[in-house]
Image (cartoon, rainbow, N blue to C red):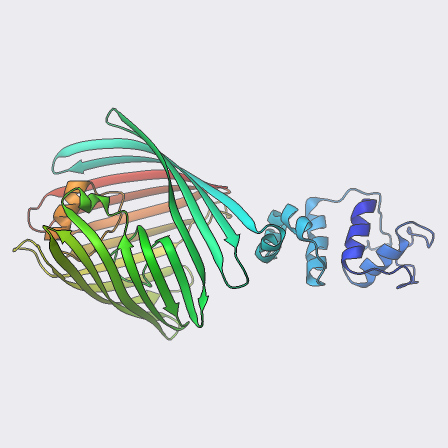
Length: 406
């Protein structure tokens, strides 16, 4: 063990020169420069010798052995933030969490994601395809003990059907914290509901409150900012608010229900009102089944369109970025009425079809599989087979992607 490392570790634990007089190891005599520090670390249980009562301080340690020492020092309350960051992977393998230490060592953390995606689509007999490269940088900073800030910059580069496009913008900027007992998110965020149908899945300017643990209540208010596929077809969501709740009924069943309302600029006026209720069954640690019923009242809906719809889904496993070889699969069956969603943000939907589905409803199925190829590298393949419930226009889409996080 290096001299500087022994001294630094000992100082972190508050070593005093006269704290321990006993000779802990036969090859560390009382006159050795590291005697006092090694005595303290051994007595505290941070370092251990070998079976023959030797320390072997001139032997090179493996990273795993060093991580064990760091972990023990952390358990004793030593301030070893930099060492914890350096040996984060080895500590993770030992089951030691270092997230809190990372926050202490650096108030602002930057992470990123790179995605290459290929899409092949066939809509009402017309084929198209494209390649997309997307890069994201996330900025996470601690404001104080109760609030944090998150920002995201995204760059898109698209090549498809002979066209090239590129753009960079600041897509997310929000604060997360607590107001009394309410978890609060405010700013430009990616809106997600507690559970239920694929009603909204993209950026949202507003405020979101959540309360509770086993029984959760959520309320939000704001404006959709990326419902572009609807805007092209003359439907522009202006305001969006809702309330929803989820409750655990024992260990395996979750009940959820909600009401969403969007004010639309649809020929100058209009609203979409959506009610949903459903159940989710947890079938062990890695599997679940879910069913959602939806009813909506959409101004401007096609006269032949249905108001009611449902979604059935099943999921198993999950691809984890830090676990090579982990995988997950999932599937959904849709039978949606007009206005059963505000903006689902599916990769499969082009603008005309999304607006037609919004007014007329759709049915079909979706499947996904993900696999961790290497650490922080996940392969993703998804397929949609959808059909408009009024016009019978078909939309089939294959989406494949490689996600790299750093």
